[in-house]
Image 1 (tube, rainbow, N blue to C red):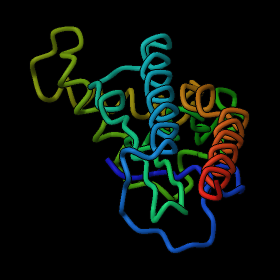
Image 2 (spheres, rainbow, N blue to C red):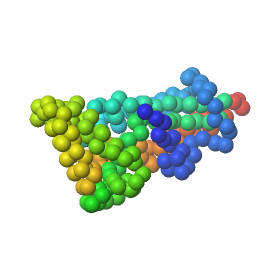
Image 3 (cartoon, helix red, strand yellow):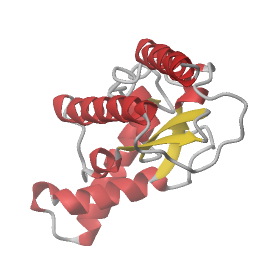
Length: 193
């Protein structure tokens, strides 16, 4: 699992100002509560979408979803979504090496030379073993079946699910920004009373 995205980078409009970010957190601050509210909401939405869209293999993707709200010196507000690195491929799909029909709008494509060589096949071998498809026992059958599936996905691509894009939208991020701005304004008013 890796930190794959901080919401500043998603929509190119910052949630944090120019003050240097530190790892200090003030759990009692109202802004922390606001960040936690949105973090909880987005985690629930993502996990619910994974269930609704029946996105499952090992369950690692769903289990990886977490968030980390931070406030540094009361000036920098960061909400990092933590999720397995491959979520973007599941969300946006992947164009096939021979066809883009399943994911015509995806920025990702099999055969582009950017991914790990043999990674899809390795993943399919692991998946076929875990699922024990068709009661296959012989290693040669597992390898053959996994190779066939990997080749089919590689050539045809993988459809997008939009499980992430449907939850963490530009509108919901902007709503959080507005609420943060309102809370900062209220904090400043309270400070000068």
